[in-house]
Length: 325
Image (cartoon, rainbow, N blue to C red; front, side):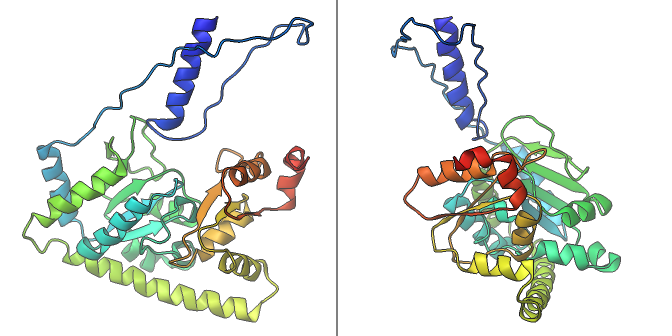
């Protein structure tokens, strides 16, 4: 039993780190009686099994294929979903768009909102007519991170499917949210965009000109959407949307923001954060996603001296009120 516990702990700790960093659940069976007069003792001298992480790279032939597909694409899009803050990846994506075009749609939970992406894509895709959606839909889709909040984006990408869809992730799970998956690239996103930029730079070609025009079209829609949102908030200062904008604007730089589910995270994603705020966003996005919001916010606050702000609805308190005790 002690050997098994040691092995299980090693496996659990390793799984929190690789291949996808995240929480791990450990089930602990308890024998009755649960309480005993016998003193509980355990050995701290447990063997920990180390995992040597492999260095996973793509081959030269694979890079040639990816470069050719990107250069042939007229409307390449990168969609970033739920993920941890990563300043290096943020800078790489900003540089990548500037050099090679394409458009980045960064979900508010992706923590890539400072990467020069389109922040009001939820507003754009929910209000666009079919003709505009056809022109905005990608012919090459690149996805990183976890799920996205925007239902309208999911519906648009499912209806107007790209010719190719690359999912960048460790592991071999076929995450096919948009029903168009063609390639799973089991590499780190930082490595991918750094090397992809180098590979594209080495090609003397004008194949990215259409991708730059595509980005300009999205930026034009972004300006229109931002103007509409500003006007609405001014006209209806007591609306939930206006309240959310005030909360997002008031967040201190380099603070933590924990967003509840349902309308809370959707309003926040609708508005987006301003570039330069440098705020880390957490949100429990699961099958239901309500339970644990308050507990997660408290746990996040205990790990740092930075201000942590929880924005949630009354339903979350009902499900998670034990956390307040």
